[in-house]
Image (cartoon, rainbow, N blue to C red):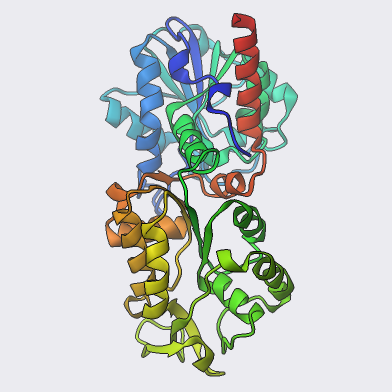
Length: 405
């Protein structure tokens, strides 16, 4: 899925003064057992949309999912109360949290320009996950402007991410959603060449579609982790007891046979006899891997082969580490590639939970072109799939421009 950036409206394109603005944000933050927020990154990332709509005179409602509530049964653990409190702290004002909000009420009638309310966990509403048209129409009646700023949920067709955009008078993308689509479009729609992708992780099965899609587009596809082990097995190399998926060797072999020059496999690796932080690490040429070895990182010769590919790149897409970087003895490969990406003048986009953890560990966040928090949506976009939430914003954007022309 390659989005034409002009096809969706942005919140900044819309006059919100005196209008009711419904923002679907991603406020699904981690909490401890006491319900306290342990990382407010997603809340802070959602603030630009909220601040912009308020500053321009909108009457703002914001909602999100949090956790996995049972529809129709909102519990205290599912409540957005801690989130509302944190938004209030960031804005320096107290906020009203509305529990039963789908059909409006006094709070809605009294909502005026510059006001902000938080609407309780949207996934507690019956019909949300089923993308209920009836529910979407009820919610669309609450607003003049619908703004989706939750890219991380864009791959799910749910009432607040998809169907609601069909029925709201105006549907647009918030700044976080727009930034994700801009960055992904820059990386894939018209990338500066050469285009290099790094895909690591445990299983080929979870990223097979991604690998097939990327290998068609890229100049080099660097694989790491358990994915690389499966490709090594497909190429006839010994991998000992390393994590791999033998059932997917035929698919990996097909990719290698069709695009061998694009997929540089490790020539040396770092192995251990046990999967443990204190396990002795040994560097071995790939064909010297013993039957009882575990491959836990790429070796220095492989790093020396891969770094120049990154240095020459015009665009870099990174999803997944190339070793068990959480253990110091097996972090060198991921760290070397991470630092090469950070030093490269290429436009780089990185996403995925393990990737973000590696970026944080090696302190390179400020030297990555764009860091996606999209998770599954990021992967599905890279695979070329149509994301329901994006597709509906594109369609509504075309409609708005057709009417204006």
